[in-house]
Image 1 (spheres, helix red, strand yellow):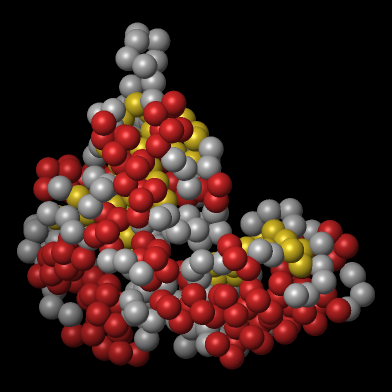
Image 2: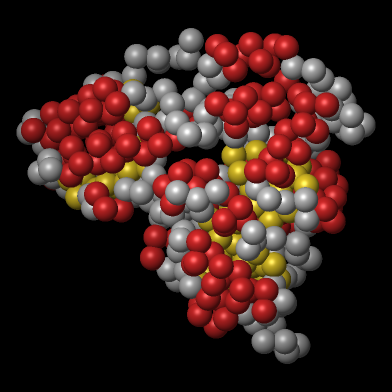
Amino acid sequence: MNSGASAIDLRSDTVTTPTQAMREVMARAEVGDDVLGDEPTVIRLQEKAANLLGKADSVYVPSGTMANLCGICSQTRHGEEIIAHNESHFYFYETGGFAAVAGCSVRFVPGRRGIFGPDVVEANVRPQQIHYPRTSLVIIENTHNRGGGAVWKVEQVKAVCDQAHEMGLRVHMDGARLLNACIAAGVDPTAYTKYVDTVSMCFSKGLGAPVGSVLAGDEETIQTAHHFRKMLGGTMRQSGVIASAAIYALDHHVTRLADDHANAKAFAQLIAQVPGITLDVSEVETNMVFFDVDPKWGPAKKFVRRLEKEGVRMFATGPQRLRAVFHLEVSAEQAKRAAEIIAGALQQTPA
Ligand SMILES: *Cc1c(COP(=O)(O)O)cnc(C)c1O
């Protein structure tokens, strides 16, 4: 159904295509007009997501990028500063919308694998003097993408949020893969989200819906987010057709995320033994595996092209670094096969 179906596609969990059952639900979706506020399926999804995330309300948006941007716009003013890790997705991959649209600057805090503590938040909030921008928002990412799919502990989220709130800041969680974090940590989403003011979550990654994300929070903030969604062109008329896929995904594709984690771990264990690969298996907590290939085999980009020819697709995320992401279109068998192909490529003479 999808192009290049024979390749094992580990570039991202966004490559998943809707299943036949999901398409059938989409074909039957009851629809209205979401700009006029009477899209029954979108309303149903927003209620379901708010409920899952333990928030008063939520807003359905076309992408995770827009969910984060609406979250930022709704909780900051132009000229204010956001505290975040420098490897954050919203900073790294979302075209600088925090600056271009929300008019904010970012102050970086250090932390291993994207996770930081309350001490660095406290140290980086600007004093209230005429010289400084006002710090208004902290953004945490769970799981942390460039941190290797790293999972925040509930206590770590609580500590950062308590510190931020004590200093009058708000906290947004980029939870594009929040449900992966919940499966890995063995907790309900609310265990995390009860501490944050807003949370975004993607339906189009491991959950397997074709598009869409959600931003959840208190009523007033989500009302403001509705305004920014419209401004950004993200309020879509008969969007029940796609929202129905997200409802289906929440009903059918959550618990199976554990399979992706198991496949990622099995793959990591296999390739960690291959000479030429550097990988700490204990850092594989969810569905993402990051590893380094020895420069002897050339830069990561070149190694990626070589693997592509052998039927495995991945991304290079650094000079020697590769990323493999597991999802509902990759079986345990294919995870093993992908590891064998990598091992095979590294047994050949370095090209
Ligand atoms: C994928 C992702 C997003 C949003 O991406 P979109 O492609 O806009 O849906 C946001 N945050 C993280 C951590 C992500 O991995």
